[in-house]
Image 1: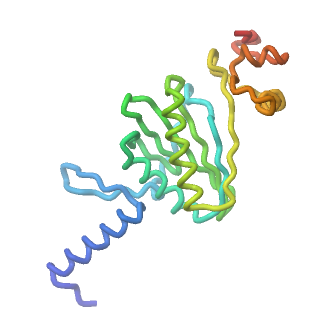
Image 2: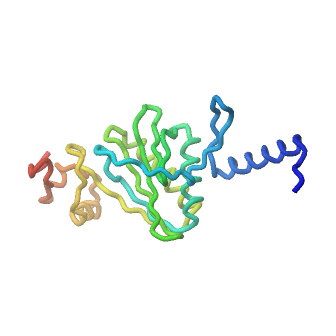
Length: 202
């Protein structure tokens, strides 16, 4: 095969780069070696286990083209004004807010066409930042995927323990209560154990 003239080759490569970036399949970053394209769906290194990794805040289950849905989500979040990519792993991405707070997501493949995305937040992330991050994910999945469902998890704000009594939580939601602290749940007879059997009753 005859190679294109250098000037035509540069034009073709530039057009390919613009297409990939415009389709949100990759991130373009300037480095000392020149511009580089980063493809989130091609990272092969697993995220290492972290002892103090935040608890799951919400899970989205969906169907569609998993690699494309994941890659375009990570790229879109990176180019927002609210979040910036810190580290990419195999189907996992760590972001930082403009206040240097940590927000993460991770995709798990259930089948070739079905997966779920778990969302994590550091304890000090304010609720408006959580809402903003989740809104980006929610709107993206509604646009790029189908059969989207959301499962919300509740965490004790005092001892950072997942609240594992969904019936009690659902009951309070049905009653119109928005407070999911341990103090509010205690009124309905719920508390949970933490730290070698102690009970959180705050």
